[in-house]
Length: 206
Image (cartoon, rainbow, N blue to C red; front, side, top):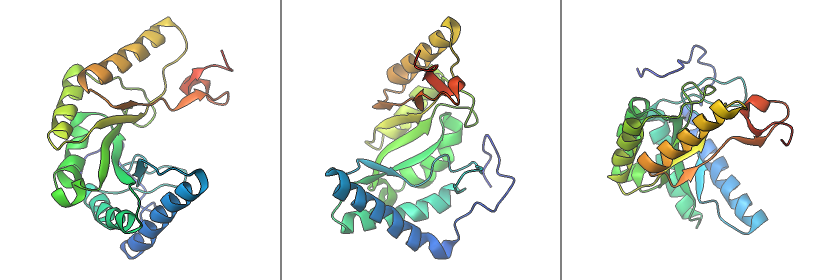
């Protein structure tokens, strides 16, 4: 029922409701193993990367309502396991209109909101093309998220090519997010990936 920037045309990448509880147990076990292995707890755990997109890699498409159900399963299980780890949602694209259905479903609900570490978005238009956002868009996102006492994170972007013009666009993207979105996290996808230099901050270590 929702209109996303990249509509899902193949419905196979769906988690069947009868496996929601198993998947929730898997996520909690992941957080437990992380703590056991590294001696620290994850601050935040994302249920699904870019949940509106049907990707070729292992992934899953969710509606806001479906993700809300999972938050209600995963959150209490993390708490019952004695973990301080909370959930990061929803990691869709960074425009305010795209986020409204997710925020109205998950963030505005007191039951699900208590399990969130932060509200996270990605700096793309379609999961690939870089999007620096706008002052108005970032401000709207911040105001909505901040009204519920949570931080706003930008957890993934890339796609700024080498050269001064693109470098200045990247600088502008950082500035817009930090100033107008008052972001607590701004994260680039790759520092150096020789196989995909167009997505990297460096090109073969340069």
